[in-house]
Image 1: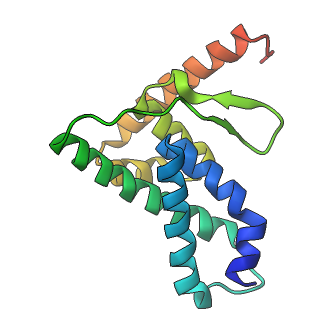
Image 2 (image 1 turned 90 degrees about the vertical axis):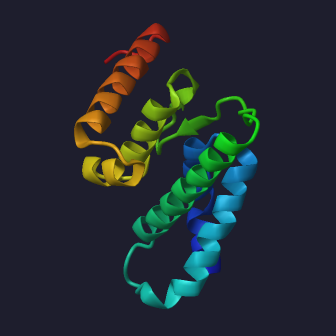
Length: 156
């Protein structure tokens, strides 16, 4: 498969993942471009008979987390950035989850764990946290999402 095939097959999914991590459409589009540029450079490493999504997902997450680090550094040195409204995120089912009710730390933990497929250890390493902190954030985020879904009438 070529990078064009990957974009056609996984481009929207990668962009949704990036939007859920970055919460800014412009930053997500920039990270999407960086992701597929990096994939184009390393396409020779991926075999045609293997599903490319895990490789694309990990590359996209690395680009998103790198961009978050740059944004945090920039915001610490400049005036605060104005965040865009929360973007709805859909997992491969017909239910949309609005993660805007979660704090940034909880949202990142949920997105990286469930949508990004990262382990607790990977999240802790990437965000410079302890594994127990990541577990706590996941627990709190799940509780808030469950409360929100019950409020909307979804049955457990």
